[in-house]
Each structure stands twice: as C-alpha cells, then as structure tokens.
Image (cartoon, rainbow, N blue to C red; front, top):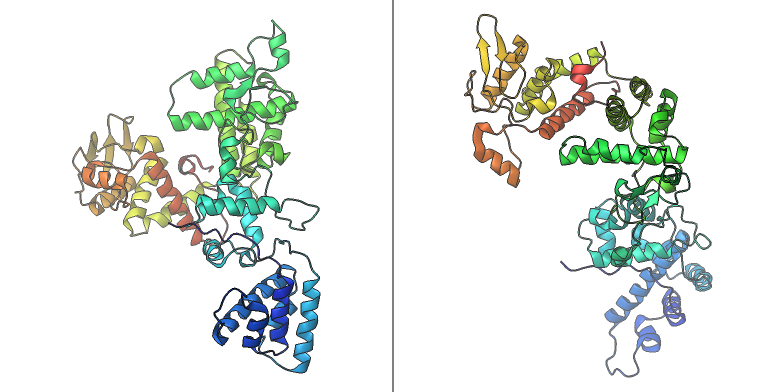
Length: 520
C-alpha cells in the first residue's frame, strides 16, 4: 500500500502568486494573467484558457486555506466565490489580499480541521478514523503514545513519521495557543529504537521516574543496615514465586505489586505498616494518580524511561481488583510470618471503594442480580440462553474457572427430584437446582444435543463460532468444544450490558463473580 506523505501545512503564497489572485479578482482575463505571471520563459507552449483558470483556482484554494489557518473565515468565504466582478466586491477582495499578504506563516490551533494542515488524501484517512480536528489528533497521540498511528487505518509508518514530526514541531508554547499539545514522551517512529534505556533505581521518594519490578533495587537505608531484615521488594518477589500461576495471572499480580511498592516508596511506608487508613489513601490514589507526569503514560516497553505503571486513573472495578491482589499479598505475608496485622483492613478499604462509585448506587444488590437472571431467562437467542445457564450455575456455587471447558461426565439426573447431581472429575460433588437443570436442558437442545447429553459433550458451549483459526478449531471439535473462562466472562458481561440498556435506571459495574456474592 502506498504511503501518503501530504502531511505538511499549506505555505504562504509568494508575491507573484498573490499578484495572480489579485489580478483575477480585479477581472483580468485568465489568459492575460497566465502570459504575464505564469508562463515559463524557457517553455514555448502557451497555456490555454482552461489551463490558466485551473492554475489560478489552485492558487485560490491555497489562499482560502491560508486564510482559515489564520482564523479569517470572512476572507476565505470572499474568495470561495471569486466569480463576482462588481466594483465593491473587487475592492474588498484586493484589500483582503493586502491584509493576508502582510501575515506570516500560519500556526495550527486545536480547533482547526485536519484538512487545513494535511493533504487531501491524508485528511480523508484521518477523518474516516474519527479524527476531525487537530485536538482529536493530539488527543489520540497522547493516549496511545508514539504508536498512535496503528489505530488509524491506512496510515503507515512513513506517513506517521511526517505527521508526528509535524506535531512535535507544534510543542513550543511561546508560539502556539494550541491547548492539545502532545506529550514529551511522543517521538517519531524512526526514533523509537533510540529511546534511552532504564537503569535500576533504589526505591524511595527521591526516584526521578518509576521503574518496573525487575529494575527495582531495595531502599538505600535497607541495604545499609545489616539488621533491617528482608526488604519489601524481596518479600514481593518471594510471593510471586511462591506457587505456579498462569502467565496472565502472574502479569496481573506483578502489575499491582509494583504499583503498591512504588506508592509505598513515595509515601515512605513499608508493607508491615499498612493500615486501613493508608489503604483508603492508596485506593483514592488509584482513582487519581498524582503527579500524573510521574505515574501515567501510554503503554510502553518496560525497559525504557518513558514506561509508567498507569495509563490513567482506574475505575471502580479496577480499583477493587487491585485491592484484591493486595489482600492476597498481605494474606500470604501474614501466614508466612513476615508481617503481623489484620488483612481485613483491605476488605474494609475495598468496600469503601465500591460504595464510592460515581453513580451513587454502590454495589449490586441481590435484587439487581435476580432481575438480570429473570431477564436472561426470557431471552430466546441461543447465546443468552447459554449465559442464563452459566449465571444460574454461578449462583449455585460454581466458579467461572470451574465451568470452563468441563464436560458432562459425572452428571446424574434425578428424575424423581427433577434435579441434577454432579460428581464430575473437575468439580466438587453437589446438587444442581431444578431451574438450573431446566436452563441446561434448553441450552443442550439449542446445541443439537439431547436432554441427557453424552459424557464427552461440553457442559456449556457456543452455537456459533467466530471466523478465526481458534473458532474453526472449536467447530471441528464438535460438541466437545466448550466455552473457556474468558469466553464465559465476556458472554456474561455482554449480557449485562444488553440488560442495562433495557433499564431506565443506571446500574453499578458488573462482574460475573457478583452473581454469587451480591449483597442480600
């Protein structure tokens, strides 16, 4: 695919070009204008009237763009309709040309359309991606960092290089009133490989910038004192290595642990000194990390100095999840005898976070969940029937990870009690309620199974598969291919969003876990 390099501002017209437009505005014939101002002395060809008009109107378009760049829409409108030949209109246009001729090269403003500063092809691609103004472009760059252009279809690295360098050139606050300037961490694509590399730093309030866990060093005071014992950094690393975890879980735990360690270092606290009050302060910090320049930035390589532990403030569900990881850390440290204290202070802080949700509704109640399940039970679409069965199983005590990928092996249907006994190899023995059994039977029938499916069939499985390699593999696996944990999570969250759209009231944030744990 070819690259569009039309990412440059329209330049001011030369004195000769201003003279061409002025002569045309005064009524001079296009052929005469061409012979006087546009003809090449070394070229024997004579411009036709059509060619002369085309060149003059091209200069007119540049003049209109130049006027808009200087926030002079009245002059731009005047020359958009250049065909008028009245004496009054002619005088006004000549005066307007003189005022423009005295202006310097224009500078962009955040409210300018991208078409004022970039070529037509490039402007069309930006506009098609929802980038209409310079502020939209700068906002995208600030949010996504130097790789912002990957979010814009049909913008390649060469065009991104030109656009980014143009944005960088607008950073000078002494010469620009643009309030949507890009951050200093944004560089041109060609410079990405030359970013400075991080060096390990000791934890402490004097840190010039945050460093990830693998580049953290114990505080200087801890290393200098032989009686200081193990540092918080060493304890956190032991906790992460204490038991095997999936790569996704370990990455999530590491992220929350390094955020906590960095915050404690800035506050000059230790893990053993955490109290309920300090955790509430930490939860408030997660909602608005300050100073933002130190804490927040777009996703970046972990070994470069522009890496930051946050992309922005965390929402209610993210703050609650962060405190859940903190509780797991403190619980392990307490059981291992490294710290003393009551980890229930974390639960108290988590309740404060949930009750502080901006919509004022707080946490989900049992009636919210019951209403959600009632709505799901009335839906006829196959995917919502699968979500209904999954929701009832979670309500009855199953964990989401427990439901993922398990088969019908071990199911014993009690016809007399109209209930289901479960003794599967991947689940604890339990009795499933009649309404849950009814929803499962309905789901099995929609998948082409019988009311008593074979033992090799997945308990919960999709009826439609996405056109991906993984979807094709599951289709080939037949009824034995079921939902994974992430698939069920996405299904239930999508169902909740569909349910909320049918309600006239605003409901709090939802996670599948709340189906079982919602307060009565």
